[in-house]
Length: 171
Image 1 (cartoon, rainbow, N blue to C red):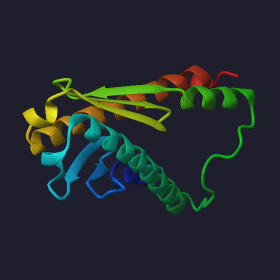
Image 2 (image 1 turned 30 degrees about the horizontal axis):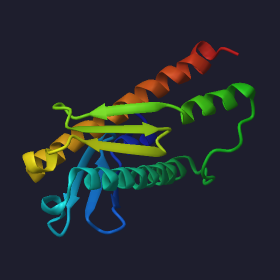
Image 3 (image 1 turned 90 degrees about the vertical axis):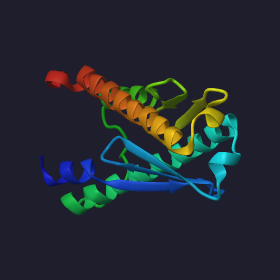
Image 4 (image 1 turned 45 degrees about the horizontal axis):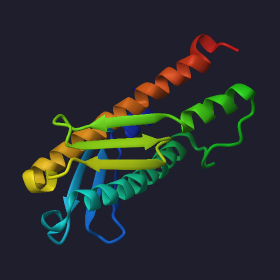
């Protein structure tokens, strides 16, 4: 791989819930770990934890996007940020479909489910009773499985979309 791909593959980003109850770290492209603060995991309920995880997922993806742009700028010397306006109809269509991609991920036991539309609107659903059944480390592992599955699903769907519009460099 080239320098850009190597650095993107190994980047690490973090985000903390606004109330400080938990921090998420994304690394090695699709690996997630959580840290609960102030004994939050033992005090939370499934619905509240799902809402907080969804908020942190959104913040984490913003942090990932910013870090990607920083790495891209460092490697290429191009310090423009964000996407410019689409130039062609094909590019407009590709972006519209990309922003509508609905990706899903779930833990192996199905207790933690994650859904993201366009990687902007996040939903985390935790099966009732999960926080009372799984200890903190078991939950962290389950959340990591669900997040990793969602990221892999997103990239698979994005690759298929890119192939649809740009495969064989079709006009």
